[in-house]
Length: 468
Image 1 (cartoon, rainbow, N blue to C red):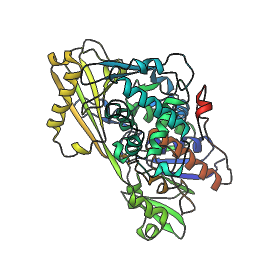
Image 2 (cartoon, rainbow, N blue to C red):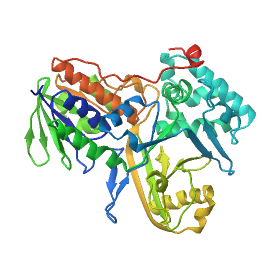
Image 3 (cartoon, one colour):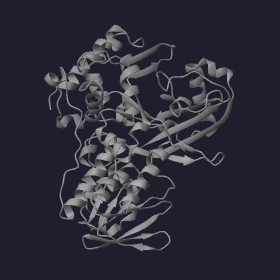
Image 4 (cartoon, rainbow, N blue to C red):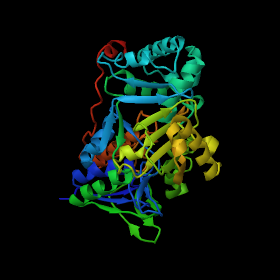
């Protein structure tokens, strides 16, 4: 027996995370997505030249992302993520370093590799170690949301080299914004959850298949088996509202769709366009959204005519390019046919108007510098993918603006990594928002239940140092 009908607008990770538990609970779920593949910004596009699925931009996960792990397990694709217990770094001087576990309890579990980290000097390392202890002991105080992590680094006297070669590479990759625009609280969150509280939390997971394949077919199968429907290539033009309730949505072709409950899993600027201005203007819940900002992300794909040795994932220091992912290894592509590398530039504000050819040239120089063998190879194809509005700028004061998943409209719930989840704008945040939106629907339908997923436990010495 159906528990009611739910329309979900947006088939990204947040929309999928909302749909699955509601379909499992017996709701009639209809998921609308404007693109042909699911996953949103963590998705793939269809290459016009080859028909292949190519990732918009490389995305990864970590063991600390327990909600995302649960979602992938629900979809039956957790085995399509390969986890690495070693993070590889290469600086501009050609020094190669690794962060890996050593068997000691948290937060000392990576200490041996950190002591031998070639890109940092002794003074740098002492400063970082002191800062790590301070982060564990800092607690979650309101003032951490009001200053940037750059300011905190200045106060704790972090060296310029430790900032450039340790703190910045990790935080800009995780938060997609520069340190001068990143709240101290979100930076603390990344290091506490990802590096300090559990010895396996930092393990880095890379998909073994295109992101579109990771989410699209598994979600279709899951929902269809439970009576749900997915409508790709379908644009929702507007929502109709009467009083405090949504009464229907209108598709671009004029079709009107109704349901008992509605969930927007759109980016917040698109949500404001879908809702009538008479509903949003002057309402703090919606007005706050207008004060939030989005940061860009760039992905550059290069195909070479011969094999090039490269780790599955390599973090670059002292360069414009932050990461090189060896897709040939990640996807287990045929050897000897060439090499496919995917590069990432986070917080890519400075390249917003850079022509594609120039951006490829800049990235190729970084690749040549990091992988000398690539100089002998020929680039046979290249692609540049830019997301001008990729993730939420994690600026000081942001937490007060992020909305709850329950909107002022009684039957409209909101999901998205930009909503209030306590996490920066990541896939983990997207899943958490979706589960919370689903909890809102369940409660509205008279069947309240928790969809909370257990966090990795705080272990070792971290339990003594951590101040909640």
